[in-house]
Length: 304
Length: 304
Image 1 (cartoon, rainbow over the protein chains, first blue to last red):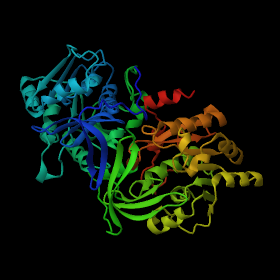
Image 2 (image 1 turned 60 degrees about the vertical axis):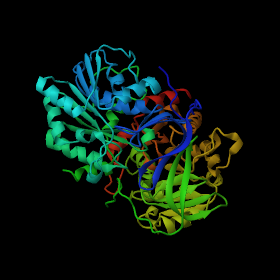
Image 3 (image 1 turned 135 degrees about the vertical axis):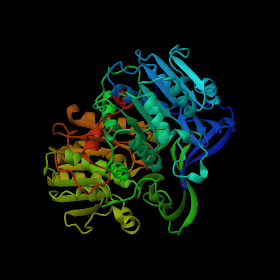
Image 4 (image 1 turned 90 degrees about the vertical axis):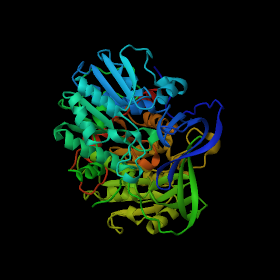
């Protein structure tokens, strides 16, 4: 498995409307893409797909970049391999992915042969369809892997149902769009319900002995998400089981944060075997991901 | 020392021409700043200073961002504290900074009381003047620190002179603009001479027992710089003394690379005391900086 990811321009197929697409990363600061707009649709969520010489294809939901085909592997490998390798080898058998209808997280989870069952629950039925058409590289190695189930439903509702049924999981991954924390007047994101104390109280019940990981955006440009989720974690989980780690996803502009409830000792030390089929993740990255810059630590201290 | 660096908009003073300034980071991909253009001048190098709500002030040389006032501390702390803390405590007494007329690296070096002498050699006399006017926060804590000398000269020429005079240093920092490696038809950057085998052969002579560190840009968007400098280092220094590390400087978009010749054992382990007056650097970041993603390692292997 070899993939050219550093500094190589990707070919554009020349279809779609040529646009200058600007994503507002912060006030008066944009990432601009001279691109073909090859898919656009409003509805439950606003979805756009661009094709760009450098990034390949880019998926936007509600005008926020979800991933580029050039570097999505970093985001997804950090989201998945760090939690799985934090648990004793072979422990993670049943996995629930809340959001993640792009299949990227499931693709990584299914690389572990001891994983028996993966459920993706995504609210928007268009995402999996668009992935199959525009981003087939995000699909699992075996797209018909019998271990994988996709459910179109609000994750909040499905978790309630699983709770009533007494189903449990060893790993829950919250892989959603960035929420609207801190902007009460403008709660457009469907993911909002996945960033709350009550949701995590339910997750703790369906995953009492396992790992619960959530992506928290890029704190340098949107600090409120990491700090908001950290407060939720502190309310629901014991402090000694809460860990924050990070990964640099170049298309996001600055380090992405992840937060994890991990009941196992020393998650900084990977417990299993190192996989051959990753592009970003290795054991030295695993250990290093938990090191936080001084100014992150000081911002987090404000929540304590 | 407290500085708000995460997700807070900075005020604009409202002077200068209002522009949309686009920096091409790669083909068809730009960082766009809705900003006041508060200083602009052509000449030896093209220099622009913007004022932006999110980033504060930004310095561009030849249309490449050098730093923003919001996150320059990350770039400079990684450039300086990792090498100094890799040497036995108190070892680094004499420091040469090639480029670095913005004072940011000198500011960090001078935080160590055992440093006796710092020489900055920068080719462009306008940079130190502009810093004093527009970026005073980059100056050393004591702007008249008697340990500091600024020389306006081509670093290549000055190193030759030091060589003839038999002067030696314990640490050499190459803190220049990104070079034009790999684009022979378009060698505009004055820093070009600082990215060559012959320059490093001279550096090894004026710093025979010390550390020689060079900034290498952001490999994800400009791989050729890190790989080019790695080849130079391999030609001049023993392989077992060559180390690569990284830091995420958000305004650069992806991790910045640094390369270091370090003759001391285990540079991953910091040797001195942890300073109070840093914002990014701490000992856990020091150790983590040397962990490289798998795809960096594979790109580097191509040079071996």
